Length: 193
Image (tube, rainbow, N blue to C red; front, side, top):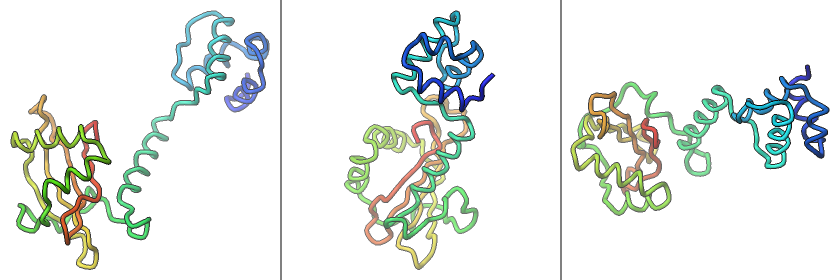
């Protein structure tokens, strides 16, 4: 049996379903389909058709759990890279000390700052967030200065899910500019992110 990499090479060079059928074994065809999370049912000819079709459509391999986790972590790190990557902020989830409860230290953020951010980063999520805030699902807000030398700060809270109120609260955070309160970046531990 060929390695998965070898099967990939063979499929790329096959110009017809017949050549896929003649070049690969059933287990190799199934592995190719499995790597793309495609249906594995059917006899060898049907599997060959599926493999050939997937190759022609350019259906790539699905990310493994580890690859998906790495991609998500890289996206989170990138979200905290500001000013063209010159400033790399720490993750608010990793900051264990220095949080100040309440809104006393919050920068002056106004609704238009949030609306400006939402135009680019998802108005649906902002509307949902506004609804949760207005219905008092957002609790335990706190402020983190990060550093006196950095012009950014974090605001975080806990958000009780609207549907399953007994479930674990979500952990939203927002990064704001200290001087004008404008929203720089944000994230939530909910499915929408």
